[in-house]
Length: 193
Image (cartoon, rainbow, N blue to C red; front, side):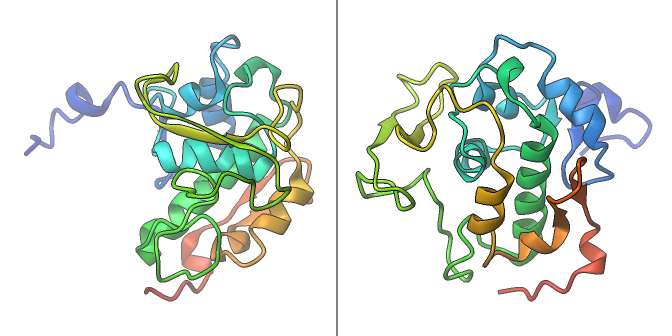
């Protein structure tokens, strides 16, 4: 229990809340403040932005076509990646299961994090996995060595739109704009499981 007069002592160090009144520009600045840091490590740091768990720090880069090992300073359109992750997180918080694929929405299902196969579900390339003890950010991870190359620095909005085409989170995004739009969950009908 927190005393209402002193919540900042306990949560004041946290970054902008992805499920609250999201300031996408601030979140992008905070996640990008250490340009040498790996993308997934920066997303998982709750001081940068509160709400990215390991599922989203692994699957959002896959959806966007960038490696979780890309230096955050090299990522073009970081705001779009954060908007996509926030849309998934917000939608799944209301719906129930943490589903990033949009298939079998009543189940927890991920593109990469818990993938059992060794080939990418999108391109057929090799899927690499690391346990948390071997990951630089101490969390398990998985990525496709073909479609998430370290040299891919630009968020592929077309790929993201395709991979989110069956997910209700797509209703919260407008990836056609220069600045991605994150809508209010109240404006979208999301049927609970």
